Amino acid sequence: MARSEKKARRLVVGGETFLWSLSHTHSELGNGRYEGCRETLIIRAFQARGRLHIVFRGGPDRLVPDGFMPSGAVGTDLGRTLNLHEPGTVRAFLDLAVHQGWCADDPVVEELDGWSVFDEVLALRGA
Image (cartoon, rainbow, N blue to C red; front, side):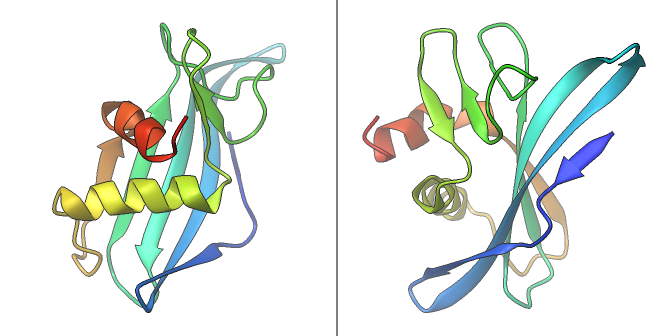
């Protein structure tokens, strides 16, 4: 089962336009129960082939929207959270991905574990 935003949002960085959206996916177990919740931030440059999927999977000390957390919220049991609906948060993830070598025109969809850069983005956001 998947739920995603209807329309990509724009983010302009240094004269270059990026499009981004957020999706939530999980597996349905039946009887209104789900498992494997994950929030995915999808970023691409306008008219480019490549896509970056920044994935947040739920797990121990890793909180994603699962009926208790609001849409777009990811965080830890320690109360550290990011809102993936905020353009500033998206910009921080984009900046880190580019710094790590992501090329927007590469035809491959690149997946990045969001938790691997969570603390860096949190620091960039001043949280």
